[in-house]
Structure formats: C-alpha cells, structure tokens
Length: 200
Length: 357
Image (tube, rainbow over all chains, first blue to last red; front, top):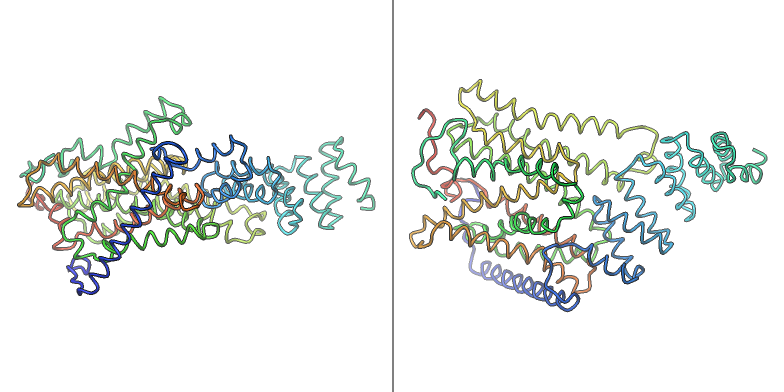
C-alpha cells in the first residue's frame, strides 16, 4: 500500500497548528483578493478584466507619457518574461526613446536569445556596448555579426570601431579596409583609415 | 452523464469510455484540437486569432478553470484532509509566502521561477497524457506490462525533452554559458536544431510503433484513445512554434483536465449515501467553482500585489508562475491510484476483464 494512500493521523497539537496555518493562509489570500478587487476599482474604475496581463497597464502609462516611470517595470517584464520577445521589444522601444543605453543592452540581449542569427542586432548591441565601454562583450557581438553577414560593409565598419576602441589597431584597419572594399564611399571607414589608423 | 451504471462492452479499439466515445475522444483524447486548430488557422490570420477578444474568455473557461480545478478537487476529494494534511492545510500558505518572497527579489529570482514553471509545464502535460493513456488501457482490459508502461512513459515525455532543450539552449544558456562560447564561431545551434527535429519525429512516430508492437506481441489492442492522447500532446509541441504550442496545449490540456476531473468528482459524489443531486448539478457546481476560483487567482490576485506596491509585470508573471507550480505539485498527489484511493474505484468501475471478449 503506498504511503500516500495510507490515512495519516496527525497528533492533535500538529493538527491544530496546521489548521491555524490554513486559516491564516486563507485569510491572507482573501485579503489579497479583496484588496486586489478594490485596487482595480479604485485605479481603473472597474473590476479586474477577464483579459489578464500587464500589457494594458503598461500601454496606459506609455500613452500618458510616463515612460521613465514605467522603465523599472518594463525591465522586470523583459527579465522575467524572457520567452516573450514582445516584452523585450517594448523595453527596447521605450529605452531608446529615453536614451537609456543600459536597458537598451538588456533588451537586445534578450532579443538575441530569440533570434541568435540576427546580424544587425548583434552589430547594434556591439555599438551600444561600445558606448557603455563594455569592451569585453562588444567584440564578441561585432565579430559574430561579421561572421553571419561577411558581405555587409556596415557590419565590418562597426567591428572596426570596436577593435579601434580596444586598441587592436591592426584588426581595426583590416576591418575598415574590408568595409571600404565592399562600399568604397563609406565615410566612417575612410576617416578611420585616414586618421587614427593611417600607420596600419 | 453516465455515472457508473453497467456499461455495454465496447470494441477493443474504441476502448471503455467514461461517458461516450464522442465525448471522451474529443475532450479527453484531445481530438477537438485536431478539428479546432486547423479550422482556426485556415479561417483566421494567426495574429487576429491571438488578438481576438474571445481568447481571454476561452482562457478563463479552460485554462484558468483547469488550474483552479486541481485545488477544488483537492478539497472535495474524499479523505484528502486526513491523508494529505500538509498539502491541504499548510501548502497554500507556503505558496503565498514563497510567492511574496519572490516578488521582493524578482529582479534576480524571477526568471528562474519562470524557467521552472515553463519547463515543468510540458512535463506535466506529458505526464497527464501518459496517465490518461494507461488509465484507458486498464479500463479497456489491455493490461500493459511494466516494460510497456516504461516505454510508453519515455515516449510520452519526448515533447518535454524537446521543449526543455529549446528553453535551455535559447534562454538559460545565455545566463550561464560564457559569452565567448555562446557567440563563438562554432555553430553549435545547428546541432541543437537537428536534435530537436529528431526528437519531434520520434515523438510522432514512436507512439504508433508502440501501439502496433503491443497489438502484435500481446494480441490485445490498446484503445485508440490511449494512442490519441499521446499523439495530440506531441502534435501541439512538434508542429507549432513554441509560443503557439504553449497556447494550444494549455487550452486543450485544460479542457482535457476539466473533463476528466469532473467525471471523477461526479462519480465520487453520486455514490455517497447522502447524495440527493443529479450528476449534472454536481458537474455544474464543480465547473462553476473552478471558473470563479480561476478568475480570483489569475485576474484578481495580481492586483492584490499591485495594491501592496509591486509592479504590474512582476505581479502578473510571478502569480501565474506560482499558480502553475502549485497546480503541478497538487496534481502529483490527487491523481494517485493506490489501493483504497477513491480514484482507483472510478477507474476500475465496469472494467472489462482480460478474456471477456
């Protein structure tokens, strides 16, 4: 006979302790439910919707221009709801509006787990990390972007900028030359090779 | 709803259903999903389908209600308070406490809670499919050997492994694997894609092979519903992109769960000497209570945490995760079929004995 199917007789003190915990737990649950209904009525003027979620309340804050107030919750949503690309997209969009490079990077990292072969995203993330002086991570993404689309002058140019920031001038020059080969009119590459990479 | 009156013998392939083959195959077997999903994809655009105003009601009536149903079953199943005192009396409070602690540390623990719930979900769905498959086999007089049950188990949870590998390689890897390996020039993701394709294929083919093997070697047939329930669970996760798979699985798994749990509840109530109500009345009570509790848990409880000052996102996401995990744990206990358990009486009622063809 399985242990679980045997009726277990609790001693009276244990049973009364368990019953007390049950009562307290239920009381807290009911208070939270009642408080939640009251909060919804107060904040939104109606009972909690059948459509549950946080997107609607975020949309309301965004539409009322309270992006900076919303940022911590957007970041939390993107971190917890890692499997939902729309949460990361919303964080990216709002962080871009506020020029918040830290959260732009968080959002981009989250989006890369959904589309790991998005070369443009890798390059954009590298550029953001460069602006934040995150030089340990930036070259991983810029070189990965170039590996994914070796025919893109822009990606080579970004990789060149990252190498230059790291002081890896030879690699920077090589990347800029490749960018110029692919797009002879690319100004960023021309300027970098004219100065400061004129000796490489 | 037939509640235990002597039943006519069914054919081997149809199996011994609880209500009627039409009901059992569509709702419990998952056959309804094979009709509804293609119809919806054919008639509507995918984005329209997910933005539809009807979807939240559908989710409340199947998904949310099914989560609540395990709690309603826990407190209405005869004998659970005596046999499971911790689960019935203490565990809800423990869940609330842990949930509140997770709210306080959501920025670093939130995603792990989400990962636990997202990886446990397909395991839970697969385990339910396995349990139902075995149950219908037993009811239909096809007693599987231990080896066959073990094979059926491993086949049933193949979709879980597929989802687990996707979750770990897509998301958890970025939390743990060093960036220089994650974004190295070694194309390890292509190997993951191959493994996923193989797992998906096996999940669809192996149930059919096992069905045939049991028929060939034992001379007895598993009922088709046992095969159907395993196949539909696999289909939801193999055919569709992961997010779609989760949506369809939760909806139809919810319908499946509600159907079977109400059958058990009604049969328990109808055999009580003090019972004066009809089967339909018991079913309506159970389902209505489940919907109300589901609405309370999913739709109202997050506002309770927002009232306490927590953000909307963490309130909703962590409450959903907590309800899911609570449900998985409770389900692990309330469906035991040990001797003396009331569930066993429901399963074994009017079972066809082997050899009575």
